[in-house]
Image (cartoon, rainbow, N blue to C red; front, side, top):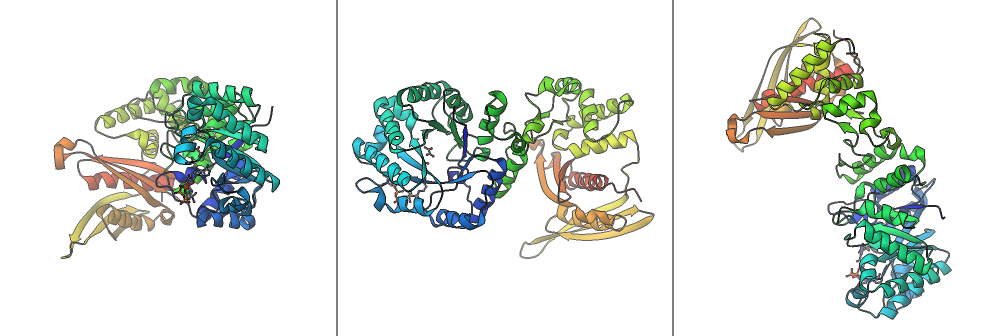
Length: 526
Ligand SMILES: CC(=O)SCCNC(=O)CCNC(=O)[C@H](O)C(C)(C)COP(=O)(O)OP(=O)(O)OC[C@H]1O[C@@H](n2cnc3c(N)ncnc32)[C@H](O)[C@@H]1OP(=O)(O)O
Ligand SMILES: CC(=O)C(=O)O
């Protein structure tokens, strides 16, 4: 059997996602990350279709050094009624200078007659001419047979003639595309099996996720004999996206025992998927299989009690194999085991302190009833554990008072000013801070006041602030929940505050965020 091809189309089909826009530099950065994943092929875009993709291939010649992957250029068969040698877009594919070209071609009779507005024979001639022209110029050619599964159901003979034509003209792989994404796994399996038996061509699969089955369809194709799978990192793509390449590769590797990616590369899967979402500016999806932040996070107390004995009992695999990790979430669904696991994650020993576990558990459950949500605020749980284990161990400073006022000018522009008075390291400090809102002003004032005794605070930064009104039916009397994310430039953590007053809720979350940052840095209480 041929070695499986893992073919990434993040830079071409992934970039067809609504709201996703990549600069040439972004594309080069993502190509480097894909190479670290050790995918076999990286489809860079469609040279000649737009200046950006043309420039990408030009810059790639000088700026992109791939250790493992092969760069591929994507384009279509020549226009009807011309010749491949004269077609400007086919010429642009050659000028891109890649060793691999992936051509898209029609394989569905209605698409040939109504979209391409040409004859079935001319479409086959376009495929034959374009593939053989590129092969004659020394290119390895893959052919994406668009709408193949729908086309096979409408006119099987014609769909198979497309595969044979491409194969005989020299295409190395004919990729069967579920372009409209409407297939289910058993249909993909049936069609792939038939194509391989009827044509002898090497077959690949390119699946879209419109039925939510793109990854399952890709796996079904491989089980039926496909030896080339296409997809995008994080499942980016037109409409509901493409097959998520890491889900597909991990399923093939860990569930079917096939060689998809190298084990060391798999161990980078989660950080690389997240690094790519930083470049695309599309937030990472926490429930993404294998690489999502929640993929191995456990909330229920019963799960935690079994996980404490053996993580295998509630996990389908070892998360470290894909660069992920197990996490315990503490909430009102927690039991003693959840608190014990959380303590273990924080490096705290509660084994001989059942009263601490019971007290934290009771406090979490009581506060959750009032609207606190600790599964989104790990750092607040850790502080609660520390305070219960060793009262006073988080008392870096003692707050005397704080206040904040917001003043609007005649033009309506509002500015806030906060004053914080606190005691630390034997000194009383009064600090003021301004901000474009009350929380921003409080953050500035608090930080200044703490910095007198703890200059280490300068490193910390508030990076996200989320507010939720908990019982909207109470109107302005409602309880407010504030979640704050604080960062030290390398990692980040979440803290929570709940109060009737939005500023008070924010203050609690802010203070805990900064105290947790000092603890993480190992700063002693002065
Ligand atoms: C299923 C997929 O996702 S395939 C990838 C699709 N990606 C894209 O379309 C993004 C890049 N596309 C583009 O920049 C432009 O559409 C271009 C440059 C390719 C073409 O632009 P234009 O020349 O203005 O044509 P337009 O986009 O309006 O129509 C596409 C033309 O290609 C023809 N065409 C479509 N598929 C094929 C094919 N497989 N082989 C040859 N011609 C094709 C269409 O019949 C149409 O021809 P027409 O101009 O004679 O009507
Ligand atoms: C080629 C391609 O992107 C598709 O058919 O979906």
